[in-house]
Image 1 (tube, rainbow, N blue to C red):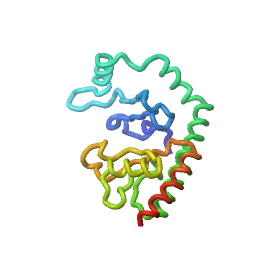
Image 2: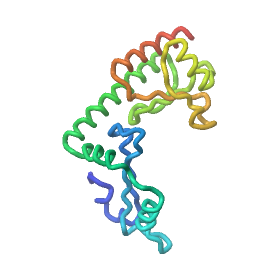
Image 3: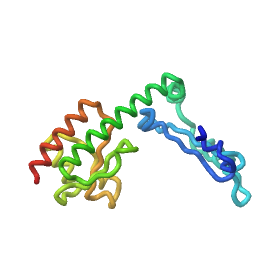
Image 4: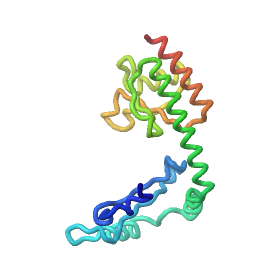
Length: 182
């Protein structure tokens, strides 16, 4: 298995690699990541790498030095060790929430390879109605799907980025609350 997509024969003329450190390394909000565009990638006589460089150098001042220095730590052996430990926690949190949703029979997707779990609001509730219900009845906070656009109405998103203890408490409260609704 290649370590990079660019080790695959012929890929330098047809692929762009994009990576964000937001979820993997906890850089949420700093909007730090990277884009690799091979110099060989061209279409209709235009070089994508040159166009990207021009766009980035005329549209932004770049990422602040402090954020760049923080990101360097991500790629050290210790940084990689910490990232793997955090991801293990996120996966465990997702498993905990998925088990709670399974227990009360709520449809969901995500969680297995993503730090978010999207669920169908139970009882035909709207996403903001479910938000209010969770907040007022169980002091649980998540994200109403409608915040992501019209198609999100009737859905709700949980994050798995909390602590193990807070996630377990959320799962317990969810089961208690939604079991009473049946």
